[in-house]
Length: 187
Image (cartoon, rainbow, N blue to C red; front, side, top):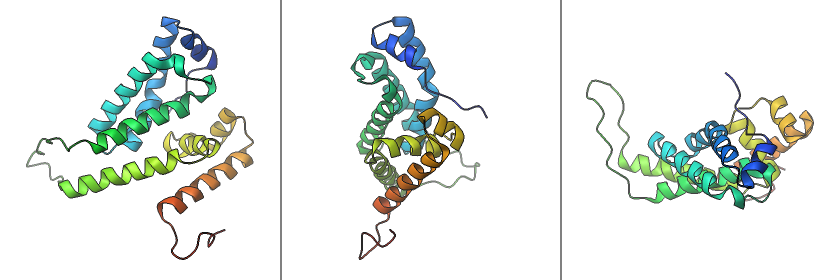
C-alpha cells in the first residue's frame, strides 16, 4: 500500500500567497490524509466523509491563515477533530435500516452515542498532546507511516522518533485510562 504524503512546502507557500492553481493542488493533495484523519476520529463513515469535505472547504477558504507552512498536518488535524466533535454533538440523525438478510448486528442508539463520546474523548486527548508528540503519534498510529518514514518526515533520528512516540502513547494511556491512587505509578 502506498503511503500518502502531505503536499510540499513550496506548494503550501504558493497557496498561502493566493495562487489558485496551488490552492487547488493543495486541496487535492491533502484529501487522502484528511480522509484518514476523519475516518479515525469520527463515529461513522458518513460523518467522516462530511467532516473531510468540510475540512477541505476550510483549507480552501482559509489557507492564508496558516501561520507556518510546516504546520499543515496539525492544522488540518485540528479542523477535522473539531468537525468530528461538532458532528458528535448533533442530534443523531435517522439511520437507514440494514437489509434484513445481511446478518449485520445493529448498534443500539445508546451504543452509538457511547461510541461517539469515546471517539470525541480520544480526539481531545490527542489534541492535548504537545505538538511534537502529536505529530509522531498521528503519522505512526493514524496515518500508518513506517517508523523510518515518520522519522525522516519530521527530521528526527529513528531513536528520537521512537522516544516521542512512546511518550505520546504513554500520555494518551494516562489521560484515557488513569490509574487510581497515583499519578506517577508507571513512571
